[in-house]
Image 1 (tube, one colour):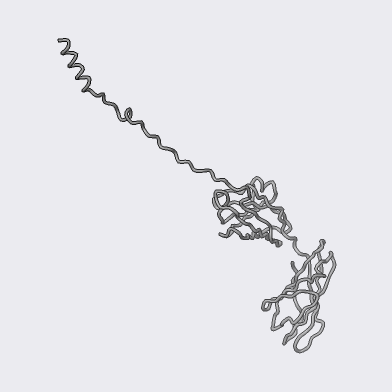
Image 2 (image 1 turned 90 degrees about the horizontal axis):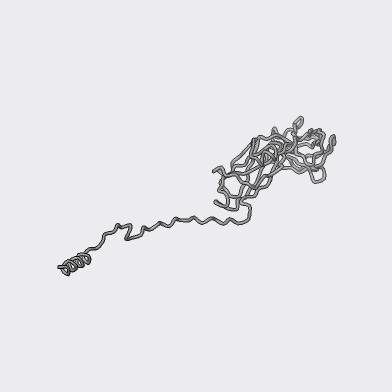
Length: 243
């Protein structure tokens, strides 16, 4: 009897297979997280800029973008002006701004500025990322030109005249360049000019200083001459002096 019981028990144990959960039989696979490689940016400024033009009320700034994101910028760029270097460093109280075009190399002119005033400039992109490197300046607008130009007609005949223009520095500071402009009222045509350099555009004429008479101390004056052809000689010329 005992042998029979042991035989039955052995057969039952051999037939029985314990069940396990899937977690116990197959280890769960852990997904490998994707890793975005950190870009290695070259050790160079992503953008450079310089002041390339000034007038009494405007500044022109040229820029070049060397790298695109993530190491640089995509144009357009916003250029902001500040009244002091401290404000520029802290991005506080911008006084004027302008937006560039889509070119990676271009120029931006910011106008409606105060004459004879220093400004500092900084760059940011359309996404609001501020360039941490460039704090440009001081960039000074030109002082108003204090000069006056008058003209006298020295000789006249039926088909033209000769005139002398006088340019005088009426300010308290020396000037190193001058330009005199006027507009013809009739069919006048400039034939030649001496002691100056002339450019014409239709009825508009501009005469700038020669290489030797551009600098005028306060109160000093210089002259240039004109030979003009015309069917009718005017009574005089109204000249505007500027830089």
